[in-house]
Image 1 (cartoon, one colour):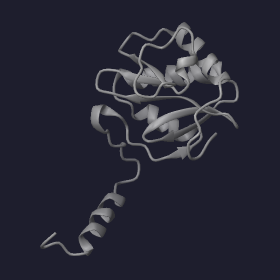
Image 2 (cartoon, helix red, strand yellow):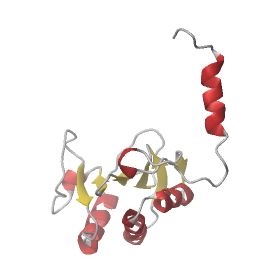
Image 3 (tube, helix red, strand yellow):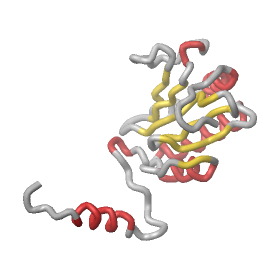
Length: 159
């Protein structure tokens, strides 16, 4: 770190804090909105509004499906993604923007029927990648109802 003074990191932080009020949220890799961590509907709506292109409309449709099919749903933004949960039961779903699709993850998706198609290292989580024009609202509503009824994922602040 030759040539750097202890004050330089502080200057960078001050420059970031000086971002004009009302400025558009930054888009991270793949177009995912960078939204500060927060609880409630407001940060989720900020995330949806910042989703690029057709993905914003998809975000509104997903949010509406979740609200209609999971009574009393709680919302938050964590790790630059909207999270949905049930009070005292943990988080049941989240979604995240990628370049060509939106990935909807069900944290206990291995218990859903039919199984969502995506799987990885976590034996419980399953997901579906939704490309433009591909949302199957009937299937998504079924998965949401099933997922909201299961014990959810609990990490850090729970709903």
